[in-house]
Each structure stands twice: as C-alpha cells, then as structure tokens.
Length: 115
Image (cartoon, rainbow, N blue to C red; front, side, top):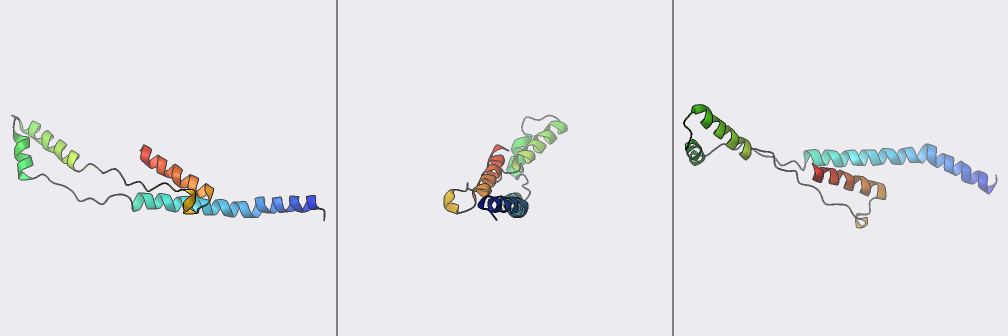
C-alpha cells in the first residue's frame, strides 16, 4: 500500500470512527457543565417575609387597602427576587482541557454572564 493510500485510509478512519467519538465526549462534557451550572451554582434561598418594622413602614402614607397591599407585594417581590447565579471561572490552557472543551466552557460562561 502506498504512503498516500495509507494517509487516505487513516484520514477516513479518523473521520468515520474517531471524530464522532470525540464529538460525543465534547457534547457530554458540555452537557455536564451546563447541568452543573444550572443545579449547583443556583443559590438556594428560603422565602423572605417582611419584618414588623417593614410592614409598619410600608403602611405609612397609604389611605387605601389596595395601595397598602400593592406596597407589601412590591416589597416581597424585591426581597425574594432570584439572585444572579454564581458564574464559574473561565478555563485557561493551564487547566489542561482540550481546546474545544475550553472554548465550549467559556462560551457557556459568557452566556451565563450575558443573561
């Protein structure tokens, strides 16, 4: 078998057998990073109610029940608004991951920062 034929056979083998495996691993790794970001980096918060002082302060200046209710509702929304998720550090070549994985991780990180 000639050298060129061997190169062609090797290239075909890589494209048909190895590259799909590499892509599968990269997709799996990116999926794991997304799951981690979604589940683990989301802060766990308990419902926050209003203190007596906050309720008392909210009642000042409202002549109607509906105005008072809307003020309380707004305060509760403000207090219980979801916190922005913690964003993991960017990967660098020092992390010794493949360039494709590093790019995918950092793209995911950028998407989190943009949201």
